[in-house]
Amino acid sequence: MRKKKIIVAVTGASGAIYAKLLLDSLTLLSEQIERVGVVMSDNAKEVWRFELGNEAYDDYDFDFYSKMDFNAPFASGSAKFDTMIIIPSSMGTLGRIATGISNDLITRAADVILKERRKLIAVVRDTPFSLIHINNMKTVTEAGGIICPANPSFYSMPKTIEEVAQTVVSRVIDLAGLEQDSYRWND
Image (cartoon, rainbow, N blue to C red; front, side):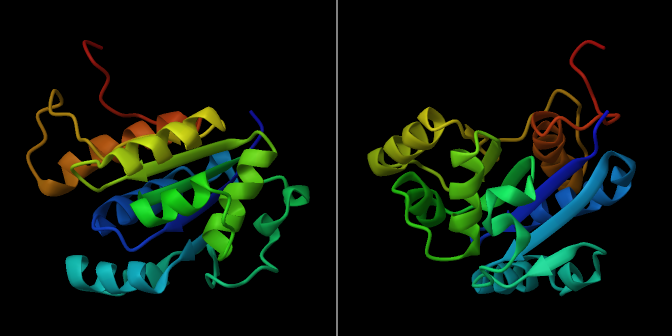
């Protein structure tokens, strides 16, 4: 199996726990991964501090880029990153992606992933959805992206908030094409 090059983008939508659990999971799956590039918006860092009570996003051994760093390797298709995961994805970010506005590294990287016909996974967190949200999700889907709402499953009988959130993250890891040991229905 060829090792993956993955972009993780974290926006300011509520749901920092999803980003944390994904980064934890990618750390554990490092033998399948060549490189992880991470970009967090300023609001994402603020939400992380508020929701998780720490700044542990600084503790991961990944390549971090500022949201305006257009010199990041994944700002170009030539860097050949396979997959981009936006977790959580704000509807503002999704709207900019849907309309082709590349005004920061997150939206530029998403534009690159889509134009190169690679895998974009947007873990949208807002609820309820307006018609604008639905149309933007439709547009991104038609462009080749995957919309993966942060809707947890409960058939694994999760007991903690981390276990509930991990059901979403495990689905994202599957969508990214990584092998993992996780709960499977009737397995």
